[in-house]
Length: 166
Image 1 (cartoon, rainbow, N blue to C red):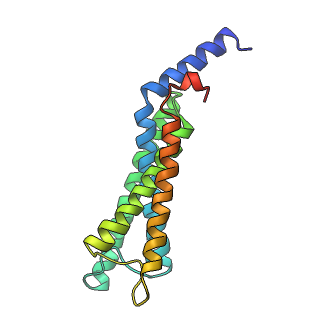
Image 2 (tube, helix red, strand yellow):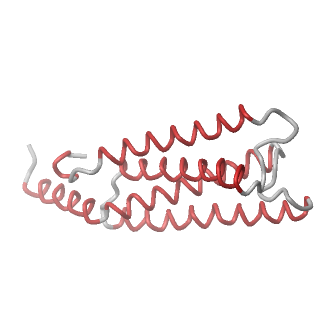
Image 3 (cartoon, rainbow, N blue to C red):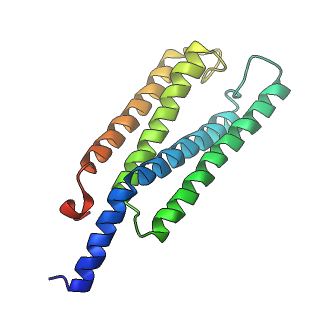
């Protein structure tokens, strides 16, 4: 059984979550975009040397483009963490909605990268001098999976928080 104080606190938490639902979503989305961009940059650009963000010029230009891309990933991550800190301060952090937003952000970034940057703009490819089809399929399939799981989590949080007890 809850005491009156616990009930009041639970109501306030639920109300804060409802009012700041969009902020939970956008904080997660920005964190997902920043994280996916960081992983792409660190793994495929720096560790594996498979490509640069912009491969249509010299390797010096490619390195500068990687630096700008890396800065973008950190700006998104830092903006997300400011929103996250504000949610925690207001006692309105909604983990399931935030994680759903994070998966949507990561999946959207990856699908945008795989379709717009790789195929339409041809800024770079995942790899060169290999059969690219398996890489493209894996890249975009992971993106769609992230989007689907994120959408399910967001769908589950569309009800007012105090009714669900989450």
